Amino acid sequence: MPLSIATWNINSVRLRIDLVAAFLEAERPDILCLQEIKCIEANFPAAAFRKLGYHHQVVHGQKGYHGVATVSRVPIREHVRRGFCGKDDARHVAVSLEAGGLPLTLHNFYVPAGGDEPDPAANEKFAHKLAFLGEMRDWLTGAETLGPAVLVGDLNVAPLENDVWSHKQMLGVVSHTPVETDLLKAVIASGGWIDAMRHFVPEDRKLYTWWSYRAQDWQASDRGRRLDHVWVTPPLGGRLLGIEVKREARGWNRPSDHVPVIVRLAG
Image (cartoon, rainbow, N blue to C red):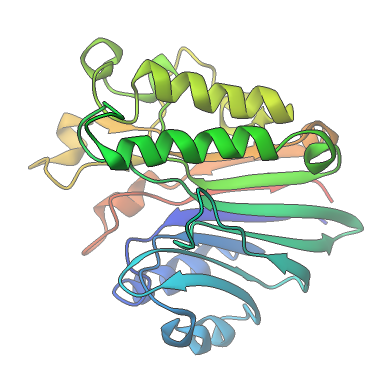
């Protein structure tokens, strides 16, 4: 049986639970990974997910900011919540599960956005982002990535030229500066990860998952960025069946500025 995994920065799960429910009813992914849930575990709308069949839930949240959650129709065996940079700011959870005879580890990440000034000396948020990516690079290698693993989430970096609306104009903008893109590529190289989205969409084609709220008409201007990612380790490379970016979700009522991405793997 194929396995489907969706990832979505929801920008407040309680505010947008109706959008999430509509998405789950329409798409029925086996697993949904959410980022920026903006609530503690006690306030997570667990009952709403159970009603939709997602009985297995792991939440790593904090009040009002950040936070990740993984909900699944597939039983979760184990889970790990990892802190980075000496902080417990709820930016990662990993679960172990088996689907269709396929055992795997699924990482759900929310990398710091990094603020507006791409100077780590002047901007503590940018320094935090670079340190966070450095820890990812150093951790996600060797034994951590030898087996079947999937990494999804809002990584807040658009690493390739066609992951942004204008490579030239975005080079000095946080999310596409060379220091960030080089670090993210180093994370990929260190773990031998396969960029599942670019496995199906050639690098010379534009590919976005985020459109700013500041645009008067996001669809007409189409100044997007690919900030949300799906990676798999080499043991899963031959099992990749497809990727969907649900662009239409950006036009829903009171949407997140990110849209869901779905990956499908052969069981």
